Length: 373
Image (cartoon, rainbow, N blue to C red):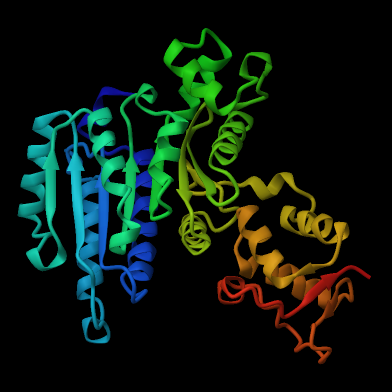
């Protein structure tokens, strides 16, 4: 990465922290209104300096802005906002001091919001502390969100992510320089990178990747296999230029949190929900498809056997789309008589109502069975 990235928040980094900000807005709104959570912990383990020479704001400031906005938005409607305690860490003490100065100068924190802890510890040492702390989150009705933006991929392993997620009360957003990793993976893989990849792709030595996109997919699938079906993994790609692609990986154990991350992605990239393009501010993946890819996947899914609205909800999210996208496909099919809808009650279904939503999923409410004519 260019040297000026240390003092200037570059465009691809702006996209990265924007996704962080957009997701935290949704995450905090859900958690702080669930009537259960008594404390939220937010960790930025490679926080950087916070403010850059070109005026850009980094992750610590955007995190605090979302917390502040939550407190000042419709406070009369909220009975209780749990404290959101923030932990900003960077091995470079000068960067941490800059973060402190910027927070004070911009009045981004008030004691009523929660506490702030600053540290200058090695990532591995901090990780050990977190694993111990996270083991008691559930019993104390606490939730945690961890942002990991490492300076080098050698700091990260799949098993570490799995350990962070083990309590079921933690969500993780991980930034990886996938383009550089892909380049090395294809030519003279460093030992640290080889260890990282082999844990996620055991047959890596026998594999070749067509491009960086296939490499990212294999890494994502590797994380999913490592974590298991009780966790959700998603990616957000950021294409700086035609030859440079970075990727954010998101991990959660809660399907609603997964949906909210997808909503944040689609707010940034309204076309395909896959990422952000450096030149056009969006990707143009749909141009390579003659048919909507979700429509094709839904058709294959229902061909296997009739599916309930509960199954359709989870399938939609696992394909990186939102319920509204599936509803659009189904409305079109309904208009063209390409779909059969059968309510378990036997009553005639209401036109345009498909019940593909979290509220039905969480209670396992089968309202419709979908099949093809």
